[in-house]
Length: 358
Image 1: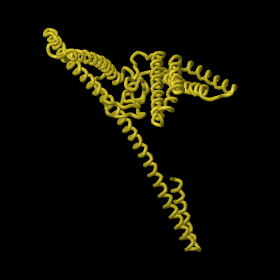
Image 2: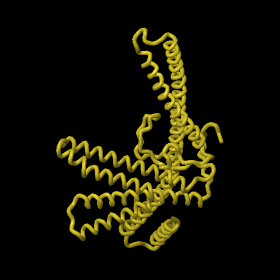
Image 3: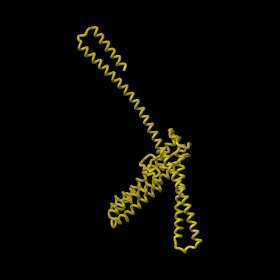
Image 4: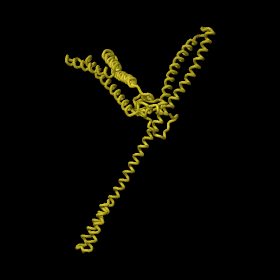
């Protein structure tokens, strides 16, 4: 594996057999289908449940909505298992909260402002539940269909292949754009340059999270020491006060060191994100240039064909002009003598040969 990306060569780094690629893509399609069918079934079950608790139904209508809820619940279990059950339970809990607590509270105390806030809160809560369910489904897919040796799910897009978020390191918002970590392939192989970069990126993020927890603990401990020192004169004994001050200085020094380490990991992550993005943009630029070159060659072929057609049309126009002129001359010189008639016949034969030669 090279230590730096070679942007001048367009190499195909995929060494998987077509059968393995087909199996992986099929599994990803199954995962996507399972998630969306689970989500649709959850919303159908929630709708049926809401109608049952909110609307006054006849006996047969009640049986129908109970059957609809049961069918949707079975589909949720079949597609999502415990993930779908948890999602449906969360949606039903939201509906029960709306029915017995939030809506009565808004009607009595909230007014229109409360109704708007309730709508926004409920929408955000539902979106969060769906996001958690999707991430859990992705993890279950990765567990049920483990990757072969030398492969890993893209660390940037988590296997989605597209990005729909803000990337602080690049200071850019992605809206349904191809992932710059895997070029939209979701999974990267060991031969790919991005594989090694993403391994380092994952280690940096893990260490950064650990350092952030350590900083939080050090800040909390340091704050407690400062609170103990913040007393009046003569309250603390000199020895205890000296020990607290020494401990405070040690915590401050450790905080400075840890923050420097945290800054180093953040800077490293930023450089790796920038490196992956630049490589992705360079590869897309190479592909676009190759596409433009193909278009140019195709246009040259069409241009040559147009020149040839134009040349043929010019010759046909010239021959038609000669033929018309010959006909006019024939009409003007009637009656025609035998010698002149033979000359005209020869000209007609010459024109005919030229037409056949085209």
